[in-house]
Image (tube, rainbow, N blue to C red):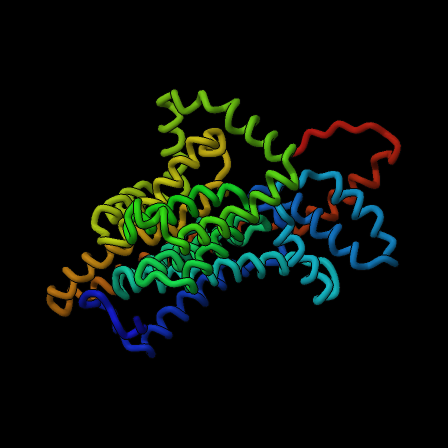
Length: 415
């Protein structure tokens, strides 16, 4: 399918020139929002998690500099923090530090922003193939300008990269479902495997998406005998199996026991689901969430199977990590592309109805759409600029200088 092909009449122009302009404009807007205020220390969003990754990246950077006087301290600090997943984004950041001449906060934000924009391109192509250009543009806009998406996807964490790999996996699975081939089977397997390796919780969405598309495309009996399906599954499972279960079994079992088994009783309490939904309301708003669920009902064929798999995987994920569902906002970052893709069928029908209206109402629709993009963009921008943490490093250096190096210290701080 080319960029000029659509599955239904479109409201927006479908020529390549217009699509490049519209998609390019949204990508530039998304990049601008995420890269503004990039020199500010990463204290704006879950600072404990971001600073932990910064400590690891610093250690990896100074490990490349054997003659640096800071090397011993940096390595000691790096080994003092827990290793939850492979230091992929930290390693890329360390190399970025070396290329740019030292530590700076722009490097990790550029990397995570790049991850998010790559995912945006895959999401657009997937929605374009499955619905039409109208739905694809709305999905892309939601993915790029939702304030929660802007703040979380620029954070120095593995989650933006994990989400990119999930989107790439869903895109490859859909392409494989259109015409099963080894090319797309291997691609989906590799993307899904890297997603789960980046952060193991991606396995829920990768597994759900694969199950939905494979069963829709082949059915149960044929799927069980299909070599491409087994190859896909092996590629998806092998990397995380080797790293988490064989490479770090103690850490994996500790996490499972503490965050799943010991907290599983929460899912029997109706209040858990209320808290979960209330938390999602603060991140997404209930209107987009319910419209997205209606979008699953409106979706056709393979897209509906993919969405059911993704939503089902997310729900099971929430049941197995119940405490994080209403306490840790970044645990929901991978829901952003799911909601965005689910909105595409709703947008398709909305704009189809708008094309039947008089010209003046079509222009009014464009104005409303521009407002729907401009307002969350402004909110995201204002949120980032509302606080300035540049004075924090100097303050803590002053505090450190006043504390005896050989003394025991207890601190009551804001985090």
